[in-house]
Length: 165
Image 1 (cartoon, rainbow, N blue to C red):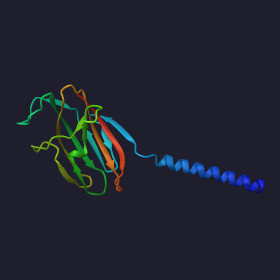
Image 2: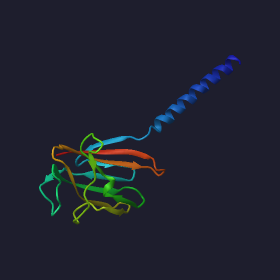
Image 3: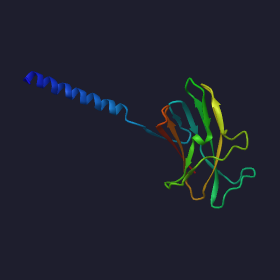
Image 4: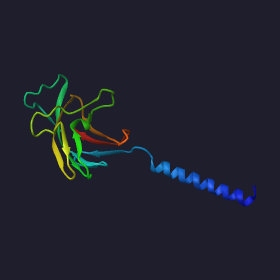
C-alpha cells in the first residue's frame, strides 16, 4: 500500500471512530433528573409538579398501619404533547429509603380532591390532586419517582422529586 493510501485510510479510520464515539455519546442512554418540591419536571410527554408534603393525623376513616404515618402532597400533571395519554396515579412511585421494600404508591382516591386512579389527558390539559401515602414513622424524606417507558417498551429517562417532611 502506498504512503498516500495509508495516510488516507488512517484518516478515514480516525473519522469513523470519532463519528461512532459521537453517536454513542448522543445515544448515551437514559438520564436521571432530580427536582425538589414545587419545581416543575419536564418529561418527553408531560410536565409534573409535586407540592410540599405534610403529615396528617387522619383522613376520613382510612386506617394508618401501626408504625406508619400518613403523608399528603399535591401533584399536577400537564400534557405537553400533541397526543392524548392515559395517566395513572401508580405511574408516580413513592420511595422513602434505600431498601428493596422502601417504596409504594398512593392510596386509592376516595374523594374528588385526590389524584385520580387513571385519566385520559388531552393535549394541553392538566390533572391534579392530592396523593396520600402511609410511610414509616421515622421517614424524613419522600421521593416521587417517575420512569419513562419508550415506545419499544424499554426504559427511558427517570425523574425524581425529593420532598422533605
